[in-house]
Length: 296
Length: 274
Image 1 (cartoon, each protein chain N blue to C red):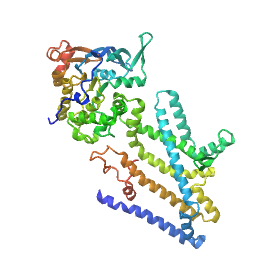
Image 2: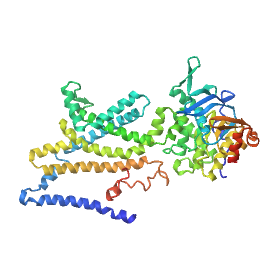
Image 3: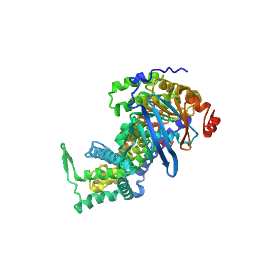
Image 4: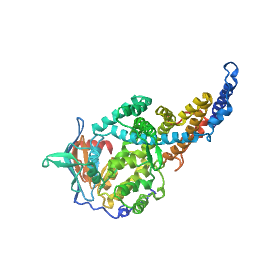
């Protein structure tokens, strides 16, 4: 087992090495296609101090966090709605999930922003909150991403709630807890253990999915590089830089995620309190080995 | 036996006084699971400070019955009163019809009824002490220091003072069940229900749990115990109720039921189990 884990470092190195080779080949294959990889241009595109770069990265992160938070909130409501005793609540939750999982996000973005705007159903006007100017398109992006995400989170959260032993609910009830207390104090904290790993994956997805909101005209990370390569006709350098930025964001998130996961495993270890135990190898260990991530 | 038990009720400020002499009064309770008639006109009374042990073969409805007493199960007809209050329902149409009570009222009624489960059902994301103080703080609105003081006293009395900060997963079944008893007691209930509290335990751990229950009975807690522990019933019960096929077959003092059962079904059951 230990030997396997030690050898596991190789695949990660291999992947990095292949990436460098790909770049080198791209740079050298200039013979027939007359393409010259412009290293200086690439570094400039990547450089966080280049104009606009830091801003769009922040924007991507902020939109992702807000949309995901909204998604979790709506997901909890939709999950509880789906399990409600009253049929109208179940109907509303089911229709919501059905629609937003059944249509492409790109279509939802266009429909609820351009379509609703044109039909005068809902206009997204720019607002200023505490001195922060928030354009209508960015509000629309956060809301639509969040509402879409909620439909996916609903199923994840419902599965998490159903994974909690029914005996827990009975014990809580027998102590005189109301439905609300039972959910907030007993069921959801335990469901969180089951929910957190897929929630982490959802957020990883969210970081990347924000690139779609470029169709609303929002200049986030992807759109920044679209515009950049439109100006200098160097798409290879621009999109390589763009990909690396997203890779950096999702990698940082991976580290944060494994921290959160080990925190939420409180009480699951039979070894000693406060330790995550060997069942949670941590992100670095996962990155360095080919072992399947535990959450799948 | 390394557990030192004693003065369990002292830890919660004495014997909680039930408001009536008859703490549990179940009248003609009928319960169906779909078409299956699981409780048939069940009548059981439990007086203040009495310990009643319900015995009977599996599927006889004894567990279902005590789950009805704190309304974890609905009933289709009959009335169950605890402390003189109708449990889980209010009467409508001049007392002819039962309408399920509001969730909030049912929750309030359950505060007075402690329950201990076969599979312990401790909250795994909380330490032993947190399990005990959870409901007193969030349901009773007790201040934290007071709840912690009571929780520590209870842990001490069930012989687990050293396990305060330990999570349930790291405890043995017997230890978990003793904490579950402490958790129920921390709400200062007027009545305790035990649903086969030793059935999921390894044999060597049964004694430590029964010891705590015996102590509780001695101190005057009103209890209904569903159990296969005939030794416990003989020693502690004021009354033994024999159920079979959803019917109370017979009831009486333990020596009478065990030594001179009047019903054939009781004799048949006892001959298998003793």
